[in-house]
Amino acid sequence: MPTQKRDLDMAEAGVTTTDVSVIEVEPRLAALVRKRVPFARIPETQREAREALTAALDSANLQPAGPWLTVWRTPQDGLIDYAPGVFVPDGLDVTDEISLFPLPRGRAVHLRMDGPYEGLPDAWSRLFAGCAGERLAGLNWEIYVPGTSPDKNRTDLFALLG
Image 1 (cartoon, rainbow, N blue to C red):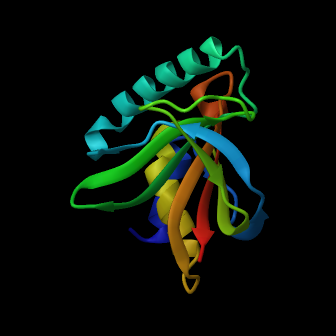
Image 2: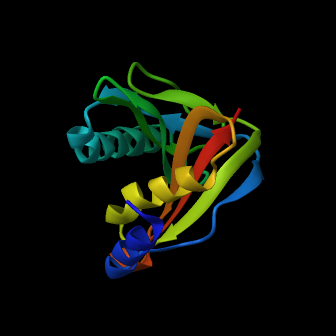
């Protein structure tokens, strides 16, 4: 899809984005529920993971150390390595379902999207188009800051550089 058409589609959907930039990211500890799922199961996987993580935090009497996020790797064979999670303090126990994952330090391509989550596929296309010539490591993540309504949501998109 040409960039101009994508921009119009995103604007019609109430989505705006920043320019793509390369930034330094610092390590942050996240608790994740990692699955390989088809794209159609992403919403269900997101809900199930949030329920499991909320229960684990409540059981450990811990509060999240930051917002919800999703870590994902490049899809293969129609499945995506998809890991919804939340930033946590040290002290959360891992389980068969929940693992701890430190987001790495390094350089990442970044784009901020404001608006409903339905705009994420186009925002990711814009991010990847904007990092042509960069070597991607294959690790990507989204950090969600919900708004008072879907058009007020903020999502930060990151693709780690290799």
